[in-house]
Length: 190
Image 1 (cartoon, rainbow, N blue to C red):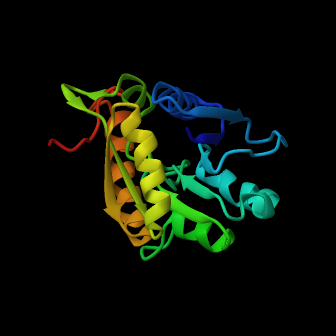
Image 2 (image 1 turned 135 degrees about the vertical axis):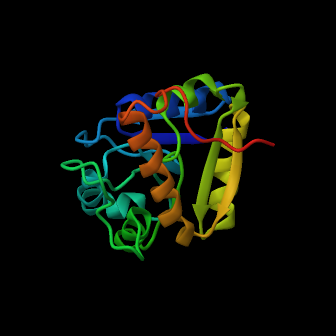
Image 3 (image 1 turned 135 degrees about the horizontal axis):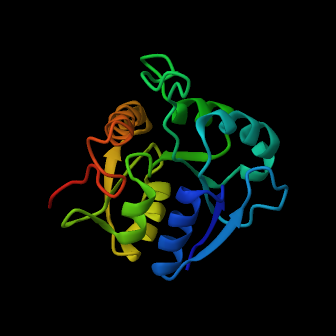
């Protein structure tokens, strides 16, 4: 059993906590402004992109040696028409640079909370794409995901986070524009 600490108590944090416990693991939920200790070996940052740097600064030593999962999509929330990281960068890469002693992964940013909670996108099983440079860290997260009945797919190195963030951006703009439902989105058919 893995203890997963989730920083963030919004829709995504709650949905991820639900899938963690559904799979037989333990979830610790911490508000992003809460100073409670992070006990899990796997830490999910279920917060908006602008909160990442403050969390990294405040918890750098505490997160050293842990697997840290970035779920953000670094959108320009003023215009909702672009990513705010440079074209050759990603929020996950920025987080990895800010947390050099942590094993940073990108995951859950191409999922909506409803599809994590239901385990379905339409009539397909929800797919969680995971990118990162540490094979053991990815295996740990993929196990938590598959234990909950979802499909976990290794999407490659942390360099793939940029493409995952672009995919997440497209999905969010489609939902915000009412082209797809918040219960829909992208998944991979087997």
